[in-house]
Image (cartoon, rainbow, N blue to C red):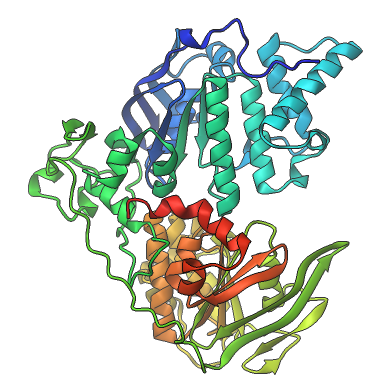
Length: 599
């Protein structure tokens, strides 16, 4: 039986020439959130939207789908081929356009996939809406045909037919994201919006997903909007780019031109905050401060308070987008074209610097299984006193299981873990502390920051001063933060508090498990610089776990590469990443090599 995929044949792609957004605005209780965003995306092209959290990227996308959260209202208009919707649009208008004209693939596929329904059912829902707007008749042949088409869409996203019978919770993050793409694709959209689709994925999975989106875009004649805070990733896949800050478009134009030779100071800051893969910097350039929230945005240029080039007129006059050389438009009263990039100072690396330094942690031949699944297969690893060891690998490689064994949260089936040369079976808080990817895993949302820090400090018997105010100062936060709740803080501020809490018992070893993977590049640079400062100031030993090789390059002296529960390569970080010997390491490097372009 032949399976028809993509947009129905009776809807010619030539009729659907472009998606055009005009003056998209979003308002909430605190005031304007997004102001007059306009763009056009031709079928077959990709538009990237970049900016820090709070810049309005996701709300702009949700306004285009009629999916704004309650309490927010959109204005402007969006044109899908020959159909126009004046925002906010009616429920009937969006019911007709959502799926058929526009589909959203969110960052977390659990927000679009039902955990209580099988994956095949959810792809079938989209397919039913596209085919005839109602249920498929209950005859055996109709069900069989629908099943064949569902399997066809799963095959298009490189998933086997048995995934149709599985629930989202039974799949890896990358597989769940592919199911979400298949469900969106089955509706036959003209425009697909992918909102941070790769943030939680490792490098190889991320590269596979981006290649998949590009292939599907070509095969199905779609326009694609890709939203991300990863500037290097957007540069590698987008044709055009919009840079947003505090709800405004501050720069737009061809992606390579904008991201290689930025003309707005904010775009420059995003670019230089990205950690390079091929070299280690003495210090990452971090943009201070945070995006001002709605209701607190200043008059004039919204970026002026964080801009090193700001003049007096910047705080009075709000700049409009104006053309500069290179086919770019920029909203800046200072810039007349591409700006000079600041100089980046490299570390003089000594490959044998850790030789002879005693080990803070020694793990030997660790095995760990869950049921019949063997996760760790004889992993051995050292962290030198005062040093930083990187542990990299894809999702499911065993990185977090290893960390939990070292921290005493899991018990290995076999193997020995030693601190300072002494094998231990139980860890004290003063031996090892964990910093998680999500600080909400550490912080009680109902407890003030000062109370949480004081509670952690009570576990310390070393005599090191550890009042909440001292701990906050240690991570570069003012004492007033002790009175705040986690919800009052930005993502970077919450992670700093989580680090402060982990330091309260004065641990010998700090395990950082993906501590910056969910942060904007500017905030990521701040946190990485902080960890470097803390190592030097406190003599900390650090095990840094990440799927991002460029991040590991900046912080670690030695790196171990983990694949399917086994160490496939280890050595000085610079040597391993410059000349990898393992095929898996080479594949990881190939997946992130575009990051180096333009640095």
